[in-house]
Image 1 (spheres, protein in one colour):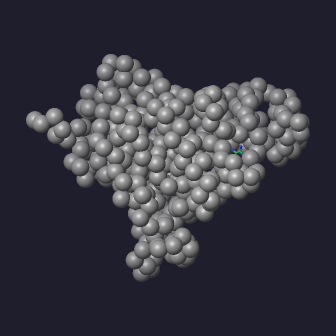
Image 2: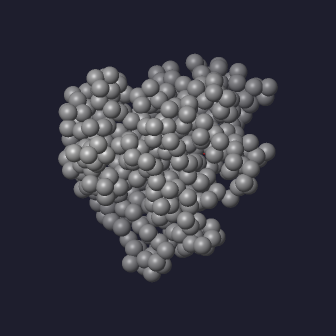
Length: 386
Ligand code: ADP
């Protein structure tokens, strides 16, 4: 077999929508994919060559996965890093590295690593009780409002609480499990915009950085992504520089999502890093030649990375379940009267109110045009439970 013959088998920990979209790209190049997920009905089940159904803290399941594949990756960071670390130490390639995963899993350690490398983050501090929150509430320190976060296990706003005034401190502390889990506080950033940058780095250190995209969250869950972000070129430049540095600091191999705040003064702070393709990078499927999932697969299999230039402005809107029950997509017939709309349905059997069930993307020659198409489709396309 020639040295560059592509015949790798890929193992993916997690079978959610991100895993599914990774696999759709992997299959184009003929990779064989094995997924590990607790649910036999997970989104990846319809496209995986094999599915190992096991809990994500089941160490033996990780070993079974490793025996079947040449390289392991993950689509979710809240997984058993220890199990993967053992496999990596036994010579099973795991990308992104477990060293970076372990730091990123903990928001306090993540911020610390960024700060040590001169990457600006909001001021933060560990919290060991309500009194500590109140001390930081002093106007000479963080003041109010203040963000309280669990250091481990948060996502989509779970594990984040806004402390509006000193009177909120106790409630916020208890609501996040203070005393039982580790908490940290962050100064509240009165930002102008939330943006994110998707970046991808290969095993050889080569790197591609997608354009900055603008994110609008509703109830702490991503609602809309606009690409390119409507910010000045100098702010874009700062954000790209930070993203580049983040990839170097974590020696990231694969696609990373880097969320940032743009302050009213035009400063850029890093909010959160995901060592995997990111919801705010779904627009790349329609708007870039090589999307974030394809480049992830290329990176972890040692292939050169693909072109990430934006070919057209795009707006992505998440489809959250509107109600509970068996999932049904409605409105596709009507929405597809616009040929520049594309719907992605993840294949989750059950809809739950607020659950990410799919998304759609609109492209156009201008951001305004893409926005108009997307907002029109938003009124039509829904995922409901029946
Ligand atoms: P998650 O892991 O749930 O995505 P984040 O830390 O990204 O948690 O916080 C969720 C949302 O809360 C962010 O997208 C942002 O809107 C808001 N947020 C988080 N940290 C801050 C902060 N320091 N200042 C202002 N808003 C924040």
